[in-house]
Image (cartoon, rainbow, N blue to C red; front, side, top):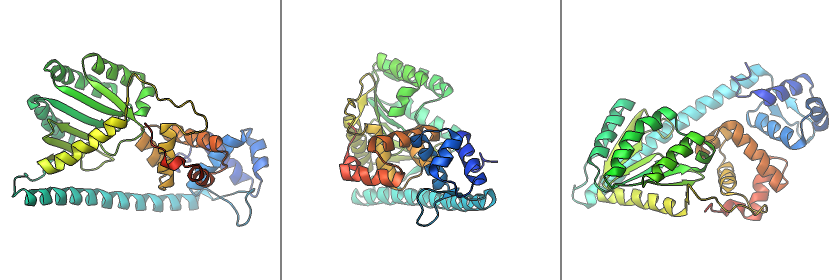
Length: 332
């Protein structure tokens, strides 16, 4: 049942402990679980984030667990609100892109073609395959999903090899989390050995493919790129997307390089991005997707950042990070 509530492992154990021992203090809960202060605070933050544990007004050392039945209703309501917001955001993105293309078309006297839409993974793959067959000089891509599946990499290998052997310039931007996936690193290394260029950054805004700086492909839904894709043409909108790619490429780190992050008094590039996303109000699940890591890794990262800041909660971490100027750090 607890996995339905979004908790598992030690977090579920702590929830049961707090539920069974109402009004117990922090130190008592820590003694019962045998966890360190840092780890326990990370789990309690997670439970608080899910509205499963609350602090009584005016008391910062005792905790009360919300019963599973009430918690389930709260989580369902939150999920419904999140889905509604995602649906609206997707529609807003689609309308914004259509409006942008229409504006460029009007300025250029109708020279920009309408947006073409492909639905379903098979149609999307067929259209992209045709684009790659016709490419003449360059392919640029954002790959924001972190570690790639072995099946997808093997399926892409023949096409990538054919492009590289034709002398096509291939530049791909992955997430920094890719460096923790040996199969993905191996594939990226293979690409570079054949002449491709691979760099990484902490986060990427959207999945993107640009062919010959003339055609761009973006998903209709950033969270589900297989559902549908928009194929965009036109000098104006392509110029903007190419400028976006080039700007991110300039601050990215080549796959074979290592970021200089030896200063323990400053956040790493990924930690800085985590803090920025946290300050924007995103949950660990959303942050994990943006960084291309698991929710468990995102929660561990939160604990490490709070320890580095000397903070006891996410809120305090945000305050201290802002005071130190960490929220303006750019990972380069």
